[in-house]
Length: 365
Image (cartoon, rainbow, N blue to C red):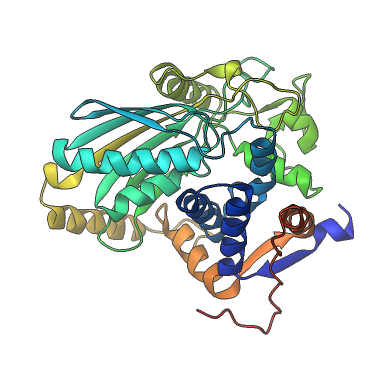
């Protein structure tokens, strides 16, 4: 890794958010859609999931430009029953499609108790956790799934077939720190390998294999090979389950038929599928009783005697919240390669990339 690629620069989150929103609007995206995408991307950066943050903006812009992703899709939502919503995303960006679908699904779940949402003709939607958080803000529990271009070989194989196929769970707790479980069925999100390649970094042992099925620390070789499944055969089985939900039940593409937006020569739409399940807790039990119960569960879990070398037991979602609070105060760090790419993109559309923060300069609210 060279010195330039090692350098990290800190920016105010609000500045990056405004840059992202303005840039998308200058590309021609509707204002409300641009706000959704910007919020989703910067939420990922704030929570420390930089692989799914603003670094994704250049590839989205490229696919808008060559019309492989519709900048302003005509999203069709069909309510098939009181608890089933079927969505055709018209090849739009997954953030916008899923945001609109989740909001409609929340309305339905508050009537029916449970709503399932099947989405086809979509694209990358950022972090699955973002949509679970939206549901938790309305005191609903949420489970979210998405498929993605081939990244994982089926157990025993050496060629990527399944996507990394993430899944997320969200449970409200009565405050601004819900339980958020977000994981891919691969040992690591493929976006982290993409970001490592962009920043000139190697990847750890055990993340991936190359085209020959051999272990590799080279992110480029990993992207040409396969990410390893989480937990071996168990992760491969989970990837298959997510593929069935998101690729088959929705009518979207599945397995190797899901196209990658990173492939320049590709002609077909990605046709990514998403699947969400929303549950209105009040239809199951008294909401305050649920909040008291889940807080008791978490308190008792955190009180379990600590293993050597551990001073705290955290529940999923705590680290995200702490990181978000920290970065809102201290700023978001971007590598020099990502900053340069964003600055170049901004210049194409006459949008100035924000100035970095100095170590002494506070972020104004």
